[in-house]
Figure 1 (spheres, rainbow, N blue to C red):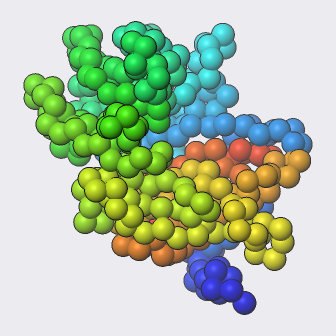
Figure 2: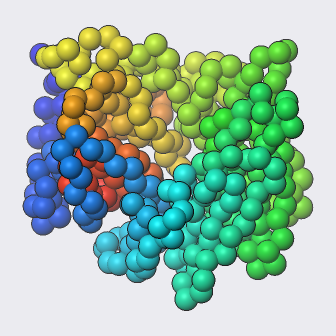
Length: 370
């Protein structure tokens, strides 16, 4: 029996009690990961055999609400109980959003192509445009005090060199006045600090004719750039504090999940992805893919969804939800999970929300077992 299999068995046994406590939330589906302690779950669409869906989810900055976008429907639920707070539909002629955010007062923002749309309770939608050819707004975020909405499009250096994209928009929602900040993003990511005093975003820079993934940080007092940190020459999926490292990036490299110190490009750890099938073809080297990855806001762990590179015809082949230590990438917990479309960690890092993408889809909030 392999070390991963030993760990799977031990974690499943340890999770039986937690799973039984959440059994009321699990009776609607056989796809709930064994041993995972579910706080609540809501059903999405029933998909035809072989079809897959895509959902987006987001926590509010204070962790009070969870927003879910599923097939042009947006729901806002209480993060602790799953009680519905808001439920509305987007314009059916609109393209599906690329990103989603919810504020601490249940205002929802969606990132579209070239603009972000804001839906405050009791009012009509308000559209905010970005500057230039910013493309798909793949990252959107509210500040903790709800004063600002930030969004970033996905444009790489080739477009930037041709004068396209490379601008983040931060809108003062009370005044409707935008501030435009320079940052190029082929993988968009925007975030405010917990106290709202700093704002940071992913930025691709050019150093010695080579592209590097880094981060830029601004003060929200006067939008002064306080730090511009070029980093890894590898494509980094997420950038955030990790353990004792102020800025770290996580990516996939040759069948491993890898963390690097952004300031030095030093490898912090690099460990194999969990194979989706321990006894089958999926156990071969390189069979797993890093589908989704998030760094916990407290910097203590990394949450990933590691799945087969080639899903079966039904789209229902399972991957693995994995919680890894920030210190060395060691597996702390893992769960066989149906195909997922999104995962997001709560601001206090005690729970996370995930959405499935095949069969009878659902979105669930689960406890972090650390």
